Amino acid sequence: MLQFQPWKITFVALVCALGVLYAAPNVVERDLTQDLPSSWLPGKKINLGLDLQGGSHLLLEVDVDVVIAERLESIVDQARRNLREERIGYRGLGVSGDTVRFTVREAEDLEKARDAVRRIDPQTETVTDVGNVVRISLTEVAIRDLKSRAISQSIEIVRRRIDETGVREPTIQRQGDDRILLQLPGVDDPERIKALLGQTAKLTFRMVDSTASVQDALQGRVPPGSQLLEAADERSGAPRHYVVKRRVMVSGENLVDAQPSFQDGQPVVSFRFDSVGGRRFGQATSENVGRPFAIVLDGKVISAPVIQTAILGGAGIISGSFTVQEVQDLSLLLRAGALPAPLQVLEERTVGPGLGADSIAAGKVASVIGLLLVVGFMIVAYGFFGLLANIALFFNVALIVAVLSSLQATLTLPGIAGIVLTIGMAVDANVLIFERVREEVRNGRTPMAAVEAGYQRAFRTIVDSNLTTLFAAAFLYFVGSGPVKGFAVTLGIGIMTSMFTAIMVTRLLVVLWLRRSRPSELPI
Figure 1 (spheres, rainbow, N blue to C red):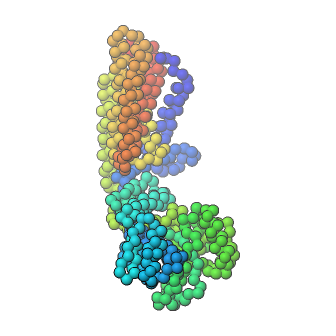
Figure 2: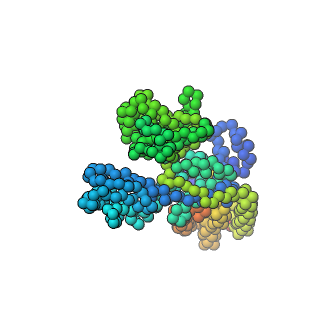
Figure 3: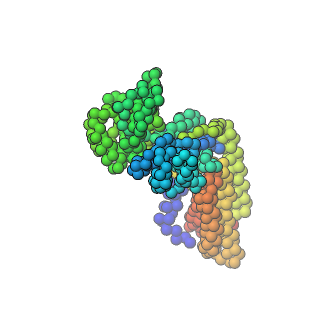
């Protein structure tokens, strides 16, 4: 019992000291932590959740109809290619409602046309009407898959964009068939977040149709294969337009990086393609030297520079009349990727700090009352040994706070409940040990033998009981969400730290006391 190896003593002392050191920033003023002489010293505080520090609550709706409309447009393009390959005459090809319609010129080509469009997608249904009309529609399964995929992709892109802004521990959850719940702790001005999420950020590089007249296009005479797009620059006053080819040279899907930069003193966005995008971009620019190409973002032309030379290497810049903030936000959007469909803000609420202050005060009161009750009980029930257990309880609380601060985990009101519960459970192990020691004393063992037997007999019971609780906390964490996860995190951390303090810290304190006092009987 008295053979407590020096490395163990050093390890326990070091862990306890680090726990107190890393927990200290939470009980001192922020100004003091900022003035610490070295950056390596701990200065992190626990992140408070939306219910404690306030923040923004947004309910977003994904416009899944846009995804279906885009899929129908792609079917139109594919149908046009297939019909041309089969040399089938047609007219009126386009989207009408939730179907793609066209009319076959010759009745004898009707069956051949149906075969041609059936190859487009197995998840489509083809129907012929009177007058040689062919209708193509998506199946119910295809529509359901498109909507589900759009929601999942939107959640992932929203998460990337929010992470880029530095907001810690946001809650991003799917609600219903087409909605996303977004909770942002600490964000009291959600306008920038809304601006970032309000852009789809679909970037494409297309050639400008130099043969077409913008004036004719404005009057509705847009050449086939081209479309009229407005310029994104709104500072010039009068709107400007471009006629650009529908065919995309390279899309933003091939971007691997985008960063804000400067060129000739002007803020620009420097980007880099992957190998496929770089090869396509290099080939397109090599074949079109001297011609203008358009950089299109969300259906608006950002700029339309003339290709001076082939751009090889897969890197380039996007220039325009940008401010520094616009360049930073555009880089963020391009790095995070494009949303599959626009997002609409259905509900917006700002949670004020008053509710958080009340919650924090209630949590502090509950924690202090729980701590005082536990401390008092241990002293009354076990005397000096209870005092040692209370010292270990202090280090236990310090270690919980230190781990939460170091991991920058978010503490919510359920998380405080987990800490209070842990405080109550923390001395359970010591109660088991001390009761075993009492039994050994009553059986006539010497103090040292009784303490040694007490720790050995209680060890397996302590591990078994805490391990099952730890499994329950892990299960809650993986299947739960939001506040349930916060409760599981604090409970799991509390179980591990309480096992360490109850077994290692109290044992070290008892050993040091036994070595020093050599008592003839135990004060327990």
